[in-house]
Image (tube, rainbow, N blue to C red):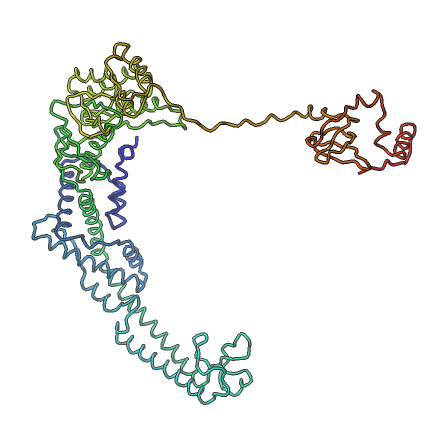
Length: 633
């Protein structure tokens, strides 16, 4: 069973993870589990409290994601050269470590134990300073070394001389140029020379315009500067690599210390994420006990709006191990049991709880059965899923377990469901576990009133507004209020009388007073269903008209004679004066049947075929012939 999803602790984790910065902390939050060591759990809770305290006093800690620097360290450990960008990331993280160290140091004035983690951080000021001096804006700075400074000055001077020489030639030969400025092609300075003056300008053709009318020529006087410039750039590249390799080696030498710093940053990020979550949820540190005692004062569901949620008062332990909660369906029973378990799980994971005050016992396991659990893929009904889950819970439950069950015994015959519910409760009582159960069965309420270590409780309900107050009252059994709610929501009095009579008998009906004066349901008019017209069968269509029938053709109202009966598509052929037409049967009406016009054995070919075709057909019936009957189409 997925307890985290059923009680929505997975959603709490999602909110928690948003408070973390580093990937490691986010992953640790995702895998966060219960602590079973009392010493470790109390330390985790103390860390959460200290983190929240520092955030409240000093603001948010200066943390950032350190994934990129981890990649840079891996590259350095392989002996490769780090890029200026990677070195800048290293320097940025070292700045963060220095600021975090200062942040924690300021916390010492409050005697905060978390503040002393600053002693585990080494800001590596020498490495940070060296990188900051030599790397700027993602590149090696001009003043990273004297050699690099001299080379880059010579490069600038060489570029200026090259440009100056080209401009001199441009001004001296204006009539040969298509433009009055120099340009660069393939890294070389060129003059835009008209094609007709190609041989007047000494130099190498580097490129030409799309039309071919302009040639881009590198003048001979500037070419020598270009060669010098390339040699200088090679020297510059060598010096840059020399500086980068030196810095990379510096980082590699400091890698063990830096790695320890990163691990501490990740650990602090995880701790401060708990403090941020506590602050965001307005939570409080719980006290932890091992005496099987839970007491929550003004508990809230952490995912509910604080302006809407009504605080819950809850207590179990001492002489009470199980609580049977009853009340109306909208009374907040499920929210109540989820609130209790969710706060207990949060506490045992080292988080603060959404209560004003809480005393929570450690539990070896948290078990629950909430929701209908219906699973179509495994062919499980609601009741089958419940029983499967309940049996798993009972197998795991022991004296150190905390169990919640919603709508115990539901989903089947009420009488049998009630019996199963009592059997489950008896088994839970024997296990010694702390358990919270919601139900509607009156027999279960009676069982709780008599059983040892079990008490009834009800969720208060405002009958005027039909809204739950989310207040749990121990020692009292609740009513379902089903008839009252149905009456207030408009169920007719006659229906309610039938319901009361079926539930409690005829005598009970007399004791009920119904507010709704309507005796029956008033029916609303609904959209009528239109049935499709039954299509005529093919047999009925094909026999509708016979050859020789006199029919009237619409809309012209002309009289014709059927020469081809209706086919399966509802089309027939009619002989009109001087022509034959195909027409849909819906446009034809019987005028005089053929049986009234012609003898029984009348030969209709006399009417519909030409003399030539009739003669050919007669010959075909007597002997072989090459004649072809011509169609009248």
